[in-house]
Length: 312
Image (tube, rainbow, N blue to C red; front, side, top):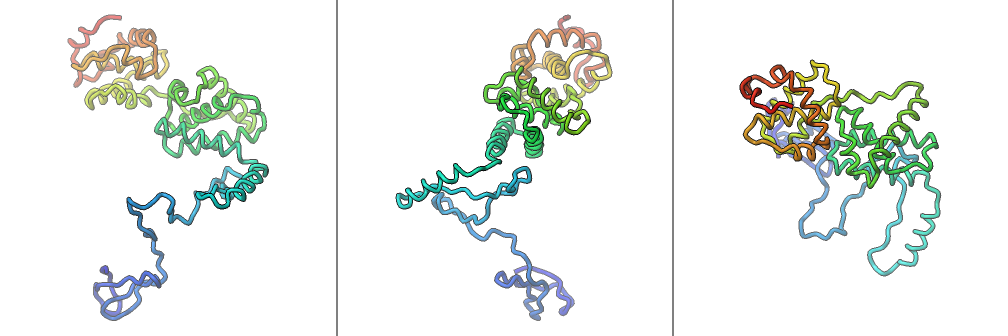
């Protein structure tokens, strides 16, 4: 039962939904207000005590335009019981013998999806990484290269292009053993390959220190006030010619903000949370120190507090 306006009754009346016919009928005059409507609700109910084998879903996964068959090919599954094992094994062998040009792509896409899930990345970044790998694979020149490093580099570039950059160390932590150097070489190879294909340089996006700030602060468990101060400070630091990497500046700003708060963080913890070496954080702090009065927000710390900071 519901409520809708009936053109015959000239008023809002209760309506009855006929799910079998897809009609919406006025309960007072019987006029069909809407016909052949699509029922978008689930056609089954799932209960906690039902076995996992009784899957009522009658549709497959979404299509994938990057695969030749759209990802809709048939896969012969093994039977749950003992009957038909011989037939299943025979069909399985023939299936494995069949030529599937997308088998390598499917495995690569699964690896990218696993890395994305471990880093907590959104699906748009995962899809962009899949597109980059497909373009590289179409060039037929990646044979013999480290596959894990290649996939990690695709994910790194996708993060940059989607304005959600991750550090190489973060990518390396989920790259199935690929080293930073290998990922760096793979990234250069991808950029060169795609540049030759399109005739234009690959747009990677600009990295700012603020891109990492909220995530680094979250890793350290900093409170909201400290996070806000760190974000404002790192934005003001861009006004000065500080020749350090954005990640190093972000780590140094976090170090300064925590030293001005009651919840001081040791340099070692900041190094672990940001992936920046302690010596690099000290050198970045040294470069930021002359500009502290203009970088640190006035509402967070006074000049006297800044003077009490240890000199580099």
